[in-house]
Image 1 (cartoon, rainbow over the protein chains, first blue to last red):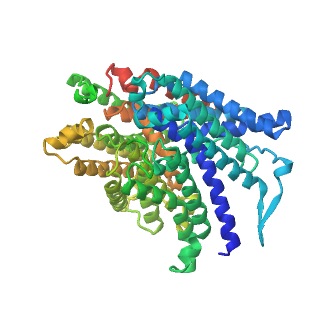
Image 2 (cartoon, rainbow over the protein chains, first blue to last red):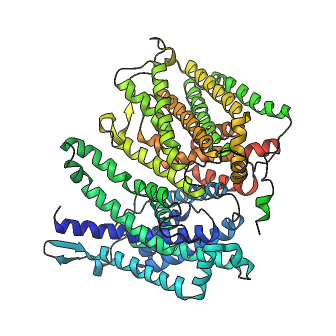
Image 3 (cartoon, rainbow over the protein chains, first blue to last red):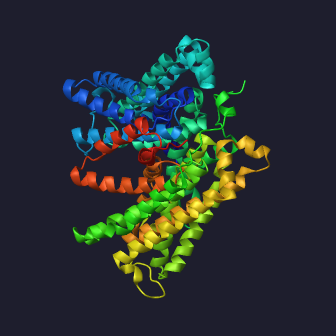
Length: 306
Length: 328
């Protein structure tokens, strides 16, 4: 593989990584602080994309579309929290899985009823639609660089929020021991609501940002949800830093694995065998990674609970 | 100070009177045995196919309930076993072997080996991590099946014919196939009940309720759990074998994580750790899907909120509603 191709694949991997981070950040906080398994988190991502498309069709303004997606995803998140999730804190994990699975079924199907099963597209903003020459022989779409930049920006913002603000301190305390935080007189219910709102917003943001480059369709969140779970388990549940590192790791391993697995296998196997085993190996790579991390470091790379 | 709840006995499965213990399964199996009579009023082929699916998924759900309900092992990768059982039947049939006993033994052996190998690793983890690591193995199996180009890749594999018994095509008839599946369900159910009530089952439940205490009285739960996981996986493998034989088709779609989720839903909906609940849940889910999807293509809009309502208001699942008992 040439250097240029490797660079492109690395950038693609980073892009998948920051996308996963945006989804995993909310998931890991909700899980870590509230001990709540929210399978419906992937649906927030889908809703973000649909809100953005709808808003764009009405206003033809990309920035406005992203803002509407953020607000819309947050509102749906708050609504779900108030109506359903609040009754499930402290319940068995399986109850949470079942109820949030019900939400996935409902919202995916509701979106299909309203918009149809076909995929929609959000036009890319004119100013960001070009390509940029990163090095000789390497042209890369500006928009994808914007996604990477936005993801890293959000990560920095979250880092400051979590490590340098009062609310961040409560979040960290909640992730390591929620009952104790509650016993010290903090309104844990309010903290839960805030975390939920932020998590839903980030997932919605991810959905809106990828709408111009991915197909916007029902179920688009399902597979990303599973990848996001892989990320938070590798990173350590409740740790934003862990989610960031693991998201980039998963993004890079998956993308580079897909582009080079067959090539690497060809050095030890016959060409046809390598062509057949390559894709299977590439798809399973991140799961092998997760199984290995769980086996050697059961609490993940950056455990939040002391 | 220790959490008070941890020092108290965990919520027990209230043991209903023995009479109750038999009424529910007796009613269930009688209903399933009579179900093909519906074929007198409708298309028999359709009725048989539908109820065969019910019975097959009931077998898989029973297997999962053994691990999930009785052993506390929440596996999110059980669809892999269904796929392995199915592919064992498919691949052997494709290579010209179609004796039902050979297929069955290979299907059970393959899913058992997969369960032992992945279980040995997975059982080193607990709780949510166990859920995720079983998901990981399930996904690996799914992608491997996708890459089996020689056996159809992601399009799947059509079986040339159903398996034969001593060279005769006894299973080709849909009605015999249904009653064979039902007999296997009964066999699995009786076996599972025996396992739960045995000393083995008591150790398993003890370890689920309080692992530390179990270790303190001299039991290492690990081998008990591993064997349970293997039995559970083989049961799902049996279901996979039947599913492939019934539809004469097997594909990676048998093994998606959504399918693993469906199995958990069946067990949860019916009522965890009761075995009866798993059968009720599986039959209910398969029939409801069929009825609602005949009513509207957007049946999930109805089914999703229904799941939420069950969780919020009917703890203990459908069986809990039926008998008024609640499960821990």
